[in-house]
Length: 296
Image (cartoon, one colour):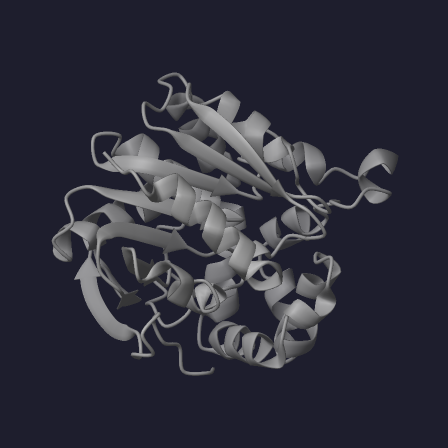
């Protein structure tokens, strides 16, 4: 892992907090209105390392390792969206932020949505990027159909990761090869997934319980379907920015949030695949700065 600095060249600040029964690792940088950044699978806070210095001049950036990922603890349970939302809400309380904005990519977007749905009075704005919610399309895009297989976005891994024990058996010892190949296949520019990223996420997933914790997110799918369909009955009150890549989930990100919120806007990033913060960090940071600039 390379040292990550803020806009002024100061190293990010690492911290740990035990909240909601789990010990979380997180980093903070910058000053201004609080902005939470949530990573996807199999990533960690380091997913945002190219974006943090582009945001820290205007925001107090808080980038945690979600329960089970990075250098956070890997408990036996609690990988559903509701529990992870409570983790993040409790972390922000611990850090002294009653209200905050939140942005997420991939599963981080699902977790960010869960935080907004759980704490609508606390979340000022939500950015939801490159994700399908359980119950609203995740299962459909993972089905073995000709349309999915010959698309840019066949989510074959959803079913595979859901199976107990077999993914751990097959990937253990091959974490670096597996994650590198898988993530690069989802990009427009494979070179964006650099060796330092692959090594960091392989290190974390190879740690005791690392693979299990990652796959438990997928094994909570049926619980998450119940949570998502329940939350969607009450539309989100805050502004929601949806972001899609031209070569992966794209405009489906917008359609996801139109089923769950009333104030939804959409931006598409061209010549980009699934890992927005690695493939187009400057453009993504500009979009986020503009959207979060006037937090209520």
